[in-house]
Length: 464
Image (cartoon, rainbow, N blue to C red):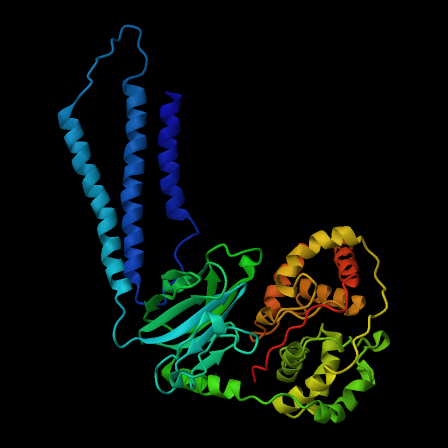
């Protein structure tokens, strides 16, 4: 009898929990309400079976409980019961599969009028490519991917010259138009998923997969990777912004084409030397930094990273928060660099400065720090050389006091969460939490201090 009561309470409790549960679908933002319908059908059918089976077991426990005078009736076969169970089970399975097959038929048949854009996944970020005025995407080849050609664009394909390259993790699409996402991975399995769109698809290395949707409301929606793709999987986030036609056209016009990207001139170190005169007041003539002025070492850093951070300061992505005392000091200095060309020039000059090992000021357990650094190495490299694909700076040879201050800034939200256009910082803010205390920070920084200055080099042209 006790077991029967438990089974009945399990059924009643499950039904009540389902009704009052706070976990429901997010409001849908595409035309794929049919997917919600198939999920609802699955819930109803499996829920009905769950209730029926458990209540039948409770009935059986009570009906056929032990009685001293009762005799068991042996009935090895019951054709009538078996026939009904077969029919009911077949109907239930058909009811589960048929809606899904119907929706899948719609999912794999993309409307002819849909326009295609590309989402590229790599550990652990998203980038995007949109067709230009010709309405066609150019061809790509994985063997062409390099630091100078991050998308693997075919430079001889005329259709790709006007393709729009989106280096950030945010892409815009217009409302009320069918959109096909072509999905490509540079490394391992990923999965492109936006909960409000209801559709998702794996990215498989060596293949181009796809999904399509028609957005029905404007807004900003988070992209998640729902395939475990490595240690930094949880940081692999992006954004899809659904715009009105007018807003989308305005955003589209601001993006850079592949032809413009490929034609970007290299920075001129000679011109940058004159511009660096202002920077040297804080960072030193040799770019070695000055702790008394809270200015970090610049020499030895990768050109693409220097450009990226200078651009962030100029656009207010960094140095805007009241709590970022030293970042706010840097932000107004960017007025001395008029445009992106000036940023490229001064960055090119900084790359010529001698890279000397800074004085060590933080002592920690190097062996423990080496173990902790395994997580950091996934973005910054085994030798602290930095990785352009992650916009992760070189750590080897950087001042230890500056590294620690930045870790504190990330952990306390001073960096990595204060600006919508900071598409790299939030990833670092999440990763910094693995260093739970001051001792852990000191240990991993002590290990970074032990790295050689001759870390292998990487370079990539500016994104504009």
